[in-house]
Image 1 (cartoon, rainbow, N blue to C red):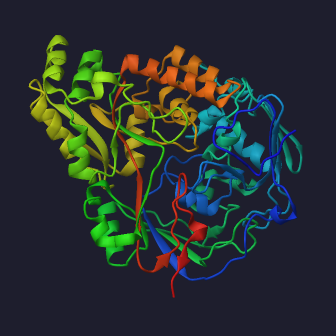
Image 2: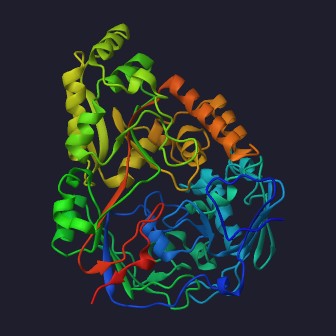
Image 3: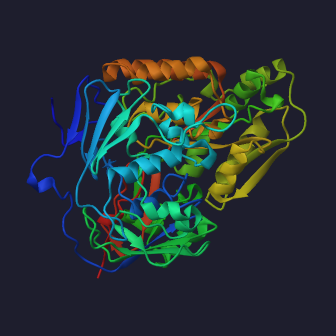
Length: 532
């Protein structure tokens, strides 16, 4: 067997082993230094339990340690996992490091992982990250199409001993080690299952920071350094997540030094370098922003309506006017910086600005009656973006002269409306891949197996699913990428959404902190140094 300290992006092999090598790696992190307290501006989370949450990635990364991590690169680094092994990409053996503990002092065990995975995969619980287990043997029994499940645990997850798990997949998946960073695959302690809702208010985790009191909703979440953490110790002693209903307010507070690290709202991108100078940190994410359609609404049933709206939008103009040219107009359904992603021109003419052709398509489809609604989460910096998109549609499509903006208070309420299909117009869509493979976005957004499919109007097609599964099982990364691209091309045949931009993650920080780095899907909170 071969051995790697981490898995380079998109390595596909018949025999795969990830293992920690050498005595220096038994504890993967340096001792703490520095001290002090810093704050991060966030919106109100939906949950702090990783397996249940959809947007609290920074909060969860502070409280919990996953099996693997990516940092600011596209490589897998083992964190709580000691090794991840497979001979066939179907049967996996995961060994966790001994000596790790929960914040209450109890040891982290393989059973903690199995219990959390079973709870996430069990349909009656209704946990958001349920679909991340769809390829594990036993998932179907926990998620029957009709009636209640006859089982409560995944038959494909077997606890061998205190530190060893065996996982059997329904089909070969060379990308499985990447998936172990997904929030559904985090462990939970025994205490979580005594009262899941109470636990969600003050989670006992296994990460670098621990709760300091309960979550104060709409105000803050306070944490302190966990001294017994076996990974890289934080530089800071304390961390406060300050909760904002409007991230423009958070941005203003960061300019004034009231909060230390903030996500830069889209409408502030034109001024952020003036406000923060070299304390502005853009990270080229594997991210796509799009406009979604309520595919359950018969008004959007004709593909020509959807294509016409796409061709009525001048992406270059919006990018310069709103994003100061930081983004890149999209011509595919996937970002460019993973193998196979960002296929130039895959969208064809339908992502090109052509109002004349847009109006022809709209007329051929029978036109449009009444107003068109654009839905998006409010208070997170999207107002100017959607005003610009509304103006583009209103000015360039003769059949639509009334575009109404609809906002929901933050992401949680917005996602809930999408999931319940109560949205009555087009809507903001976006996905930042959680690991560096086309598999993530294609599976989670554009397949029937995905946890983010509500953001694509709950689009699903059997042949798209099949192409993705064939790509998962491909013996080489090149063959996998070709099949993922075929799946993407098949999605374009239905044109279920309007690709807009390949986006960046944009953060800024106050003079109170330094060494602020942005990882693949979150801030590297342990790296942050509080300045004297």
